[in-house]
Length: 195
Image 1: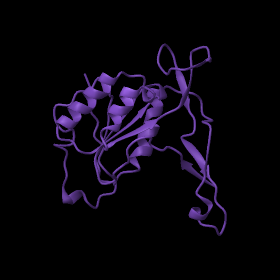
Image 2: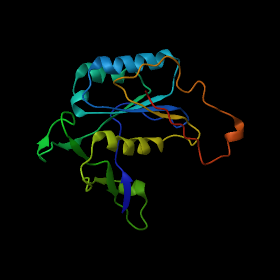
Image 3: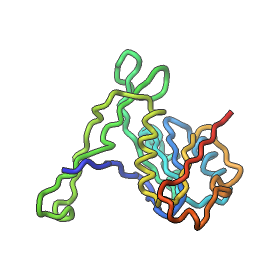
Image 4: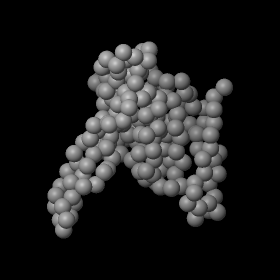
């Protein structure tokens, strides 16, 4: 058996040769997603926007329809199991001290010696998260790592918040893109902070 990621988007698909903006949006209103995407696309950015949202957001028809309208928005619905400070199960990842487990992100793909994956169907058995519960603010970086694996090594990737971001120019417009970097495998990591 092989240990594999078990995440599938509910909308959109990754384009490996594109730059991507990765974000996590949990329990936001439609206007938060509209401002983010409208200002980003308004800069001329045509790359992928990859996001995890809560089931509560995806169940809202107006949010689902809005996110579905852009074919280059890749949406994952993440089913967290969250707990309050007393360790009681709660529906929301927000409010007070909340920690969550991210079940079914990984799975086991059954393999049989001498039989191809296509012949066995490549069936994946989802796994529960055995780790300690943690904040979604921390666990989102695991999702970002998984998604970054869908892109070429020279694609630019941005991790950013959805709720309080407005774009004024294409986020990748001024990053260095030279043929001299084409054979470098180590990549370049740039950090920015808000004040």
